[in-house]
Length: 384
Image (cartoon, rainbow, N blue to C red; front, side, top):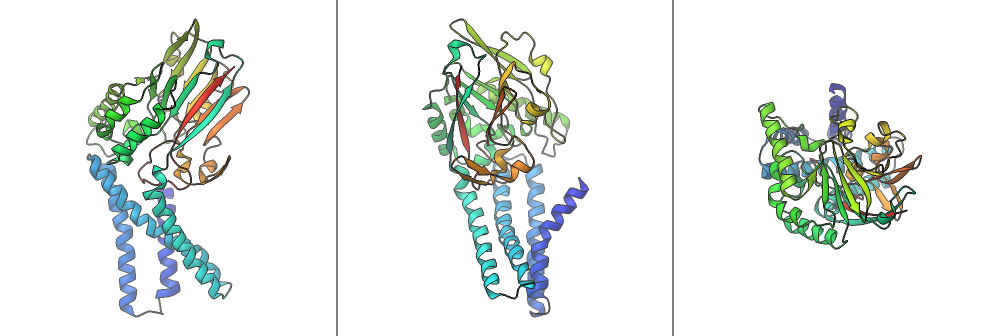
């Protein structure tokens, strides 16, 4: 952890160090040198302080406001980083054109990030998929699942009208069932308060199921005690139920259609360290009624590491990755840094006859922005 922090610390300081020694040191008056140094250090210290406030505040409004301040500071950092990366080549190639390119790239980076803050994170999209499986009962042929994930409602504070419009879009899909795969909140149970009416309006013929994700536990927060942390988790779980979701905590439910059945199995979060590993598959399968099963796991790593070739679970639904809220999407082709961390990071994947759908989610984590990887809900039609 310390080595990782030191790495990000060096990355954070690199643009300012480069710009200082390249353009300020020995080329500007001492007043300019002092002003640039003080301004750069203040920005860095302010970012650290804002992160500290974010990780300890118990006010949803404060969480949102500090995240937006961090966004502004990061936008400036991105511009300086892009400039430094391109401008460093001018040391080898004495070219004024390269310097102009560096300035252009810096401006592009700043305005692209600003777009991600102001517009990109609100650009809701719908993804339509068809999942075929021979084991699917006949009466579930054409069954429509609305898969949503990672609301992170704290990142949508003050945007109740937008969330309400998104709910209207989802209801217009007329789904048979809704499956939510975790991270309803980023930290605090109170993040749900202003969005409860919209969440209650989400409707499906056979109901709506939910699981919890790593953020719902509140582990990314400095609680006064474990009791406070547990009370927040209990309130989050209760709020999810009050919003009309059947919350599956290592549990299963059966959906019946004209004598045919499928089971929906939901586990608590499981992920590679440092993520929580609270799943209990054996408990989740207790009393299960059908050998044809849909599996809800917040982290797609469970599908890769734990389900192996369990063909009873013909379809797994996951979220968690957010597609790192950053990438390029052109038609069906897409690329994101998320692929470097997760082999199954977005979309539909198949392995040995079983499939997983990974959603890039709706909200954002501590930093509310999306560039390229817009929020989405997924409509999945089952076919025999």
